[in-house]
Length: 96
Image 1 (cartoon, rainbow, N blue to C red):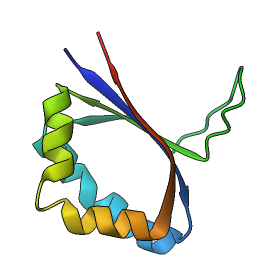
Image 2 (image 1 turned 30 degrees about the vertical axis):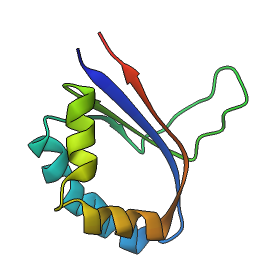
Image 3 (image 1 turned 180 degrees about the vertical axis):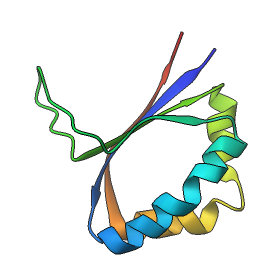
């Protein structure tokens, strides 16, 4: 069963974040992940959630997300992301 990961983050250093954005797609693909949305226009139709920058991924399983997050090659990129963004929301939901 596929798993969807939704990230809402606020970027504080766009130039440094570009470094992250260039490097991370290969690691996402390595773990079977794909982007469904990556910072595109969005509109809140109901509710109080006011996302800043949304990134939506699909992975083949929850284990694939765990493997991506724990990949030694991802660790320096994760540190970079955390240094230039504030994660406002991060969730995982089972897909179809």
